Amino acid sequence: MRIEVPEPPDGLNAAKPGDWTRVWARVLADPSVKVTGFALLIWADWETGARIHPGNERLMKVTGLKSDKSVRDALCQIRDWKLIWRYTEGRKAPFVVTRSGERKRPSDEYRLTFPDDISAIPLLPPDWETEGLGLWATLWITLEHRS
Figure: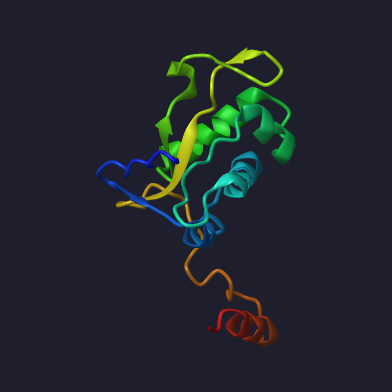
């Protein structure tokens, strides 16, 4: 039996990964933040955008970031923009015993979100895909996004 994921607090809206990815592609961020955001999608429930709990060690491996601090800083920036919501904070949870017998705290758990007010998020313009690309690129993008 799966535990229900709580709804985001006021000011935040749950986002599905497909919608979130299209917005995340427009976010102007340092490469460490950008790659961390894309990596979070690996663990997101495709229907709800929730249940993201890879842990910092896994994120380091997947993103190629060299330190736990780099991962924490990237997650902090994405949280500050309110593009993810941490609904379970692992460091406040009791220890669990892993299969190998090691005692660890569970990972933080996140949900993809959109804030009501996106003005604090640095974004490329909505037409960034076609800006300066020329006729052939515009045609290709148009055909790719047809239903």
